[in-house]
Image (cartoon, rainbow, N blue to C red; front, top):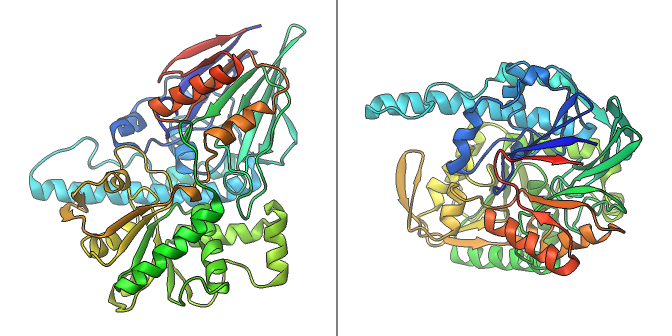
Length: 468
């Protein structure tokens, strides 16, 4: 029995998820994600270590950019095989990849003009990582599968997708490999969701696996309960409105924006916050919200009941879904307090930068962070308390109130990750802890070993392991 796994991304880092599996003369990737941490972004430009045309499939856990964002580059460089994922993931990935490609083109052109003006040259300033046409070439390769459905991707290799409860359509992937009368099972956690979150069902659990790759984004921390976070959200809004400022929320377009609308709808319905305009200033988030309404069979029972009892939480008085640049600019002329939800979630691009420019130096406004901020991103620098940050080529003093609510995270924390692993009825041969900053990943690996005695490891970038 011989199976090889190469850890090509998502190792000792939160983004850039990419794992290559080779067995039975078949090669396939699990995820092909984009690095968002500044110190690792050069890896996005590196040649693929294995020729894309030699790979037989991609198994995509979900549509976040750090899991699917390098697919256009992979396809442009020769990959033409199926990309297996759920139907909702395919729908959302189309939106996210086309948006990412457009931003790649715009950023390259913007840097070109800025560098010419400043008389300097930077790495890859004038060439987009990939183009819109590259992203469009990915779309015909999506091969949707249903949860729990078994798909054979090569001789002796079967895969199945299971609800991860992280974002709409997200999946954990179970791979069964048969060789010479023996069988091994590899479980890829993808991003594990949290139990009892709104909208989506709880994460799937498994009774057996020989090898497990488990994420560790919050592997060293325990997050506050969701109900407490909802109350804190209402308190932040109330205090900011009293101060006469705006509530600016950098948000991922997928899941986090929809969860925020859910909680804001509930808070307004229960009179926890005053009536005030709410803007979702992200065409991508608006389009993804439409996808949510196309896949109601993925909702949990409470969400289904809520929709039956009254209107969708994605549609309430005072909510404006902003699509055009003109609508976005008009928000800045509103004198009364408003709530602005805009991408990107880590402030690495998108319209949020323009709202930060308007509000970051206003002491009466609040910058409210509701998602993970990777090391090196603008969002992380603001959360870490830097007194001055550079936005769109200029420096701005940070005078706004900065608040971070981790309870909205779509990632399981340490105890919930352990709960997920504990469903296994017998010890796996090995647990590989991935998709977390080095300290977080090592902390969780140590925690699992101390509690269970299982063999755990934290792979490094480019590590290769032979499974027997």
